[in-house]
Length: 122
Image (tube, rainbow, N blue to C red; front, side, top):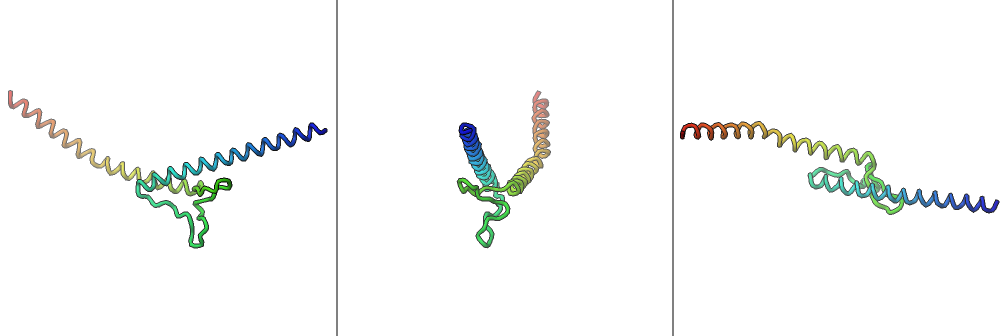
């Protein structure tokens, strides 16, 4: 009976330690993801959701990790910021793509002129 109690307490301690480690890893992953998204947003000059409201409390887009106290984006905040980053990337790619027809036309014209000059010199 004593061994069964000891075994049960040992299992419980192991499970609790595992939960703690997993929670710490999840918090660290959330912190790294938040830092990366913030870096991308700042590089693209996209506004990051405000961390604190007028009362000094965290907004709905942020949470404070229970173990390390890191302030990380919630799933909702991550989705908002990712959508903004995607929209900015799309806009930038569309702007670059708008020059492609002009560039193609100019290169074709240059090729045609070069070919005509080569034929005329013969």
